[in-house]
Length: 68
Image (cartoon, rainbow, N blue to C red; front, top):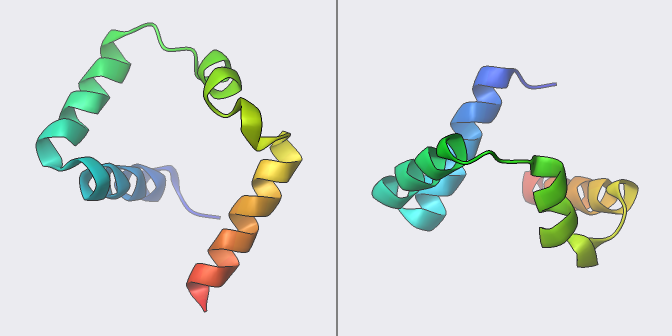
């Protein structure tokens, strides 16, 4: 299991990789400023992805592929 600090670093690295530094900082500011309800967002944004178990299975499969 990875630590909270490691998750933060990994998450920011992913944001920077896909958005760039400025837009990653902007994204974080937007999330902090808004009253953000992750559960509602996830249900709307990832609706087509399936159940938590299905998403977890897909994530584990992807992780195993990228470790090889």
